[in-house]
Image 1 (cartoon, rainbow, N blue to C red):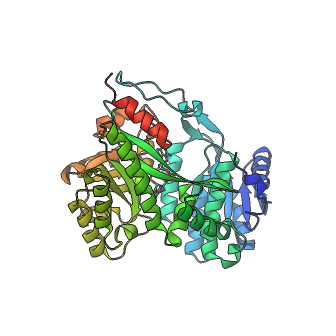
Image 2: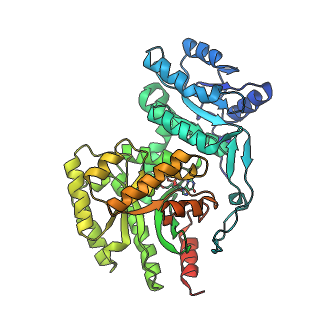
Image 3: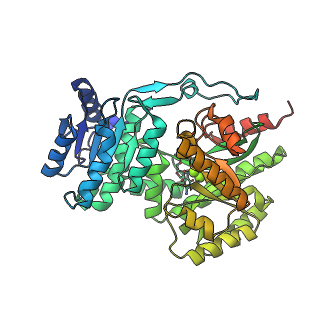
Length: 444
Ligand code: C2E
Ligand code: MG
Ligand code: MG
């Protein structure tokens, strides 16, 4: 059970307003916030009222309702950007979009292929619309807003846990900009806890998400992902944990832990004669650690595992300014036989540059394109373009974030052969992952 409500003071330094066009929705938003210990500065109904509040006081978060027929929530990012660029707003508030959700029906098996079992009944549904607006459209809009420097969170399920996570992410960004907020925040609380978790392993787990060949539904790989259960706040998502880990300089330590558990998983699979590569995420800074490739190779040798089974996914969260050093490090890793993948292709500021100048074995198409593939012709074109690039550069391709069964044949038609996502399998605890892969590997 997540105990957000047990820490009512965690977020009370945040200055929040709600934007909703009707009183019932406004009181629902206020209720959710007060359960988090936040009393909104105001509940407003229009963009002009938001402007008036921005003139009056500093605002950290605007929680707004998305509703068909009202474009206020969608217009917010451009309003904020305009005022920020004009110098009338010193700090960009974060935006949370929420609204009534519409689910699609249970997904069907495609191409007569066997569909892996899903884990929870809620996974059988996929949120198609929020407040009447297609999730894919919201995601594209949010992506543009983020590129413009505005943190936009789409609250899909409206749970306290989701709201708490989003508020924590804001606390983290604000704490860096505003030292006053740093006092008694989750951030300040968490630093000691993160150090403790990484040094003792307490509360840390590693889950594995399979990757599938889309046509045959064979498991052809996996990605290792960290999970951290805070003793007081419950499950902390990587989006909150990773910035802390990076800031504390603990990225290499985390990498070693994920690598150690990944090697254990590989050894368990080896006993079953299953040889699938497993990817571990690493920032450019981690990869550029002196002797990184040598140390990994030594550990794989010790475990008597071939290096080709370990894949490094380059994330863009801590870029390495020295491109020559990054290039040398990636080359060293590949020379030892490890595979290197470029994560979240299409979202980062520098991905094209990275792709043009560095050498990879694989690129992963970011889930935001994949999720929009059915509704947005532009996403289909982007994916088709990425497939072409991958072909030209001789790279393998993984489509990430496949949430809907019905997108799978379409992705396949566009040229994606391998995919990962909730529609195929969620990240799993180690025992469940091993059971799943071993079961899949048995002759039918
Ligand atoms: P990523 O490397 O792109 O990992 C994929 C993320 O997408 C994971 O989120 C995974 O749970 C999520 N995901 C998988 N399928 C779906 C889907 O169908 N729909 C949606 N909406 N999401 C899906 P997670 O575990 O929260 O990780 C977020 C990011 O945090 C990762 O993005 C990665 O950049 C970073 N991260 C996670 N674990 C580690 C780690 O051990 N080390 C490092 N350095 N970074 C990590
Ligand atoms: Mg990754
Ligand atoms: Mg990714």
